[in-house]
Length: 101
Image (cartoon, rainbow, N blue to C red; front, side, top):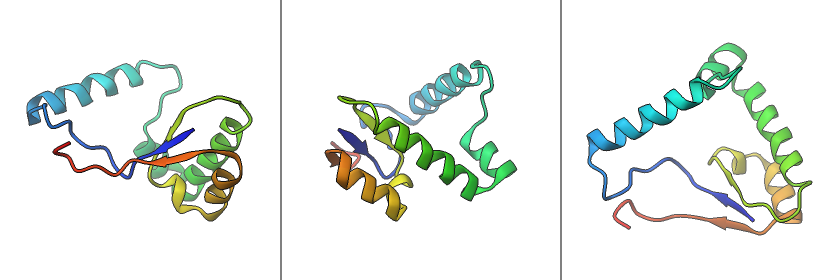
């Protein structure tokens, strides 16, 4: 199963300060990983096309493993060959909920 969301949304039970603190904590944890580079940093250095190629390769690899739940970013489904792969090899769920739910 592949789950896709269009963009990151704040949980309705979080105030702005809590949301930003949670994001900062997650970013701090990620930056501690060896070889970490943010998507924004990668795109700035290598371009969006290079990022989308890596995203496509990661999607292809994820599809070789049975019984997985994968959450893609919203950009992954914009590429026609990614949509084709997902249609052929996965059960896809599109989550589209207002921030009040």
